[in-house]
Image (tube, rainbow, N blue to C red):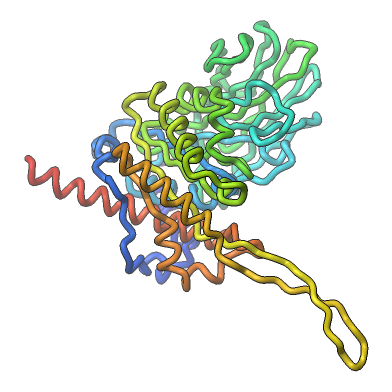
Length: 416
């Protein structure tokens, strides 16, 4: 797809995504800003030259991120502004038996099992997505199918597949593609490989077959898609139930992300699940620090943007008896009450970002001020949003980022 057609596609699709012109024009009338926004000036300088370079952004999180609506909305809007360099990280969530973004699917003739970072029993290496699929098939194959009617443009002419065949003699076949295999794209098993599929023309579908694999389980960690253009690649990695500590305990996930995705900006949206357990403020803050430290050790120049969780509630179900027409009947009652740990988690994220000079978007505060806008979009658990709610969240994040970017531009003009 050429650039002109791609921009037209993105513009029309975003209008549909955000509910038409009225939704796009309806901005946030509170303080939707990023604290310590100067910490993003390095990535802003790269965005200034997005027409001549590729900028990789990673959005890391939990179930709020896994479904894709929240990160994809922000990503699509950034790509509309600065150019689309590719779909980024994609994973066969449907083959792993879990939900994922709706703009693509995977298929396979063999059976796969999924393992996630939050599972009790899992492989020692889970790759950049914090999730892997495994099979005992001797010649496994996978097909990626991008949806043409998606708001997220997902054409590509290069696909990097990361996998562990259990040996170093496996070959990869993909029709119409040139294939180059590179050993050990990230640390972990010595037999992890990366197969780069290069296509002459833009694609939305590819199939890959892995020959001469070992007898043990074959593990597939996902793919990274590029389209050969300059601009933004926006990848999202989210696992239902994930917390900071999960990514820290399996630190090879963060290491793999830095090696495979090579992000220049990491947006971290975690903290919800920590607020639904036995919350310890100091331990939570330490886990944030571990994650940031691991990322910075691998990439000292990366920009990091922390976000606070939604204003989630506790849903308490109880039963009571009531006498009706002389007979006692049992009824159920649902009560929604504030979760005080959400505010505590948000305060810790804000405080840590302030102490370390990291950029922070306080979505928890935005969510409270914008309560009326979000009320129709809460799920029954009052923890998750509907698709429209996450799209609104993504739009607001984009507005905050672009506001900081305009401030940077104004200050840059003063300097020069």
